[in-house]
Amino acid sequence: MKKIRTKLSIISFISLVICFLCAYWGYRSYKGLESINAQLMQATDIEANLRLATDLPFYRSINKNLTAYKGQLEPEYRDKLMKKIISAHNRKSRGRLKTAIKNFRKQEKRRTSYLKDNKSVYESRILSLAYVMGLSYLLTILFISLYTYSSVFRPLKSLSKRMIDFLDNRYTYQFRVPKENEVGELELNFHSLAQRVLNNIEELKSLDSAKSDFLNMASHELRTPLTSIKGSLILLQNGVIGEVNEKSKQLLGIAEVETDRLIRLINELLDLAKIEAGKFPLQQDWCSLDEVITNTLFSLEGLAATADVKLSYENKNKLVEIDKDRIQQVITNLMSNAIKYSPQKGTVRVAASLDNNNHILIEIIDQGKGISPEDQSLIFEKFRQASGPQNPIVKGTGLGLAIARAIVEEHGGEIGVHSRVGEGSTFHFTLPTWKEDTSAPDEEQNDDEGVAA
Amino acid sequence: MKILMAEDDMNIATIAKMALEALGGHEVVHVPDGEAAYNMTKKDTFDVVLLDEMMPKMNGLSVCKKLLSEGFDTPIIFLSAKSQATEISILESLASGFIPKPFDPATLASQIEKILEENE
Image (cartoon, rainbow over all chains, first blue to last red; front, side, top):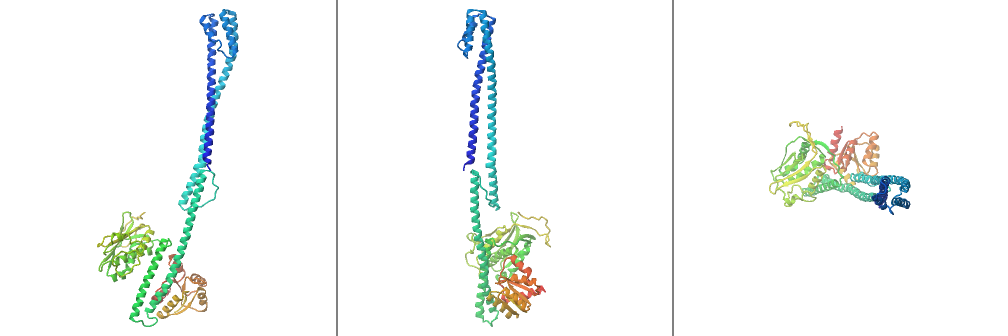
């Protein structure tokens, strides 16, 4: 399948042969022209001498000039005629010389006109050969450019377009018999490649849908028995069956707390699995950042009171485009960690500002023990918690930060931590899409509606 | 209050029934699937209908749609483990209320009463 190369080689070869033939013929014609010119010059030369012989008869030098032609003239009849002239000249016979010259001139006139005809034939032949050569050159160029355009550049362009389509997920396979040449081969190879990639994607999709089926099934199947267990425990504690004594109540309490923990763990695992599988589409809306943070703080007040920790936040009057529930979950996870690791009488501060990229930056600042650098890189991974003794108020699942990271990244933001051992920790995350809240009641009105890129 | 409850999981049904009867002082009629729930509404009258979403024979959504199309005017509340916001909003738009599973049996009765008050 080397059609393009073969075609180009053939056309180049043909064009080369034509040029070579033209050049050869041209050379031959030029040579012929040269010899005709030489003969015509000789004829002029002879004529000059004959004129001298007529006007100034029987000079020695003229005799010598004429004798030089002896045996040199072609065809033979000219030589014979010349011999007659020479012998008349030798005999110094004026009448014979005149006749002989007359005869010679008669023949010569015919011959000169014949040569002149030939000369113009040669000249026009050389001109036509030049035309043919030029034309063949032009045609070759034209053919090569048209052929490479239609067989190479155009198909390459369309192939490149299909590749871009493929990259943009707009690729659909249309069966077309590819041309039997190098570009066709390339096209065929690309389609095989694309088909293979698409088949792999198809396989991944079916795996993905199996995963999502499993998640749905798991969330139902795992939650249902836990609902029953928890419900039973609560009903027992509430004395539905009869009075419960203190020790039983204590055991029921432990069972309930642990059931809650199991429910939380399962919910978080399923949430994380759903987010990672892309089965958790964000329900994004414009909402007040202050409201979201204040609500979250409100819901954490109980936990903060138990831990004897104060919570603080200063309003910023910004609107953010977020999935409210998800971002509340992020703040809750970060805040409950901060509360967990805070000393008694400590404060957990939430601050909102703009970072260097003009994104909203939310910081959760605690006064805890801080996190060692080696732990900082681990804590956002699943089931990783900072080493060392833990605050027993809330037993974590080890998934909170992993979920927070997944949600923040889904929003196009970044999450991280700054901390030094002994100096507390600052967890921060960014939200890229925001604008000023112009409906805010008591702050200065700010008109620059900057939605950050 | 007389409550019709459709729930296919017997354990959950028992807990909900106990919670509503022992803690809330209501009367509960339990049916195990959607079809039975639909038939029961024809036989008796209730103050509120509690429907599970995922049930055999006829799911909660179908029962709800069928009843509403027939002009059924008793409040319907969904008790469902559905967690997708879109699914929840569909259920909420049709019925009087939505109680997510797992529910707290201690407050189930008061949750139902609250929904009914809001719909007054």
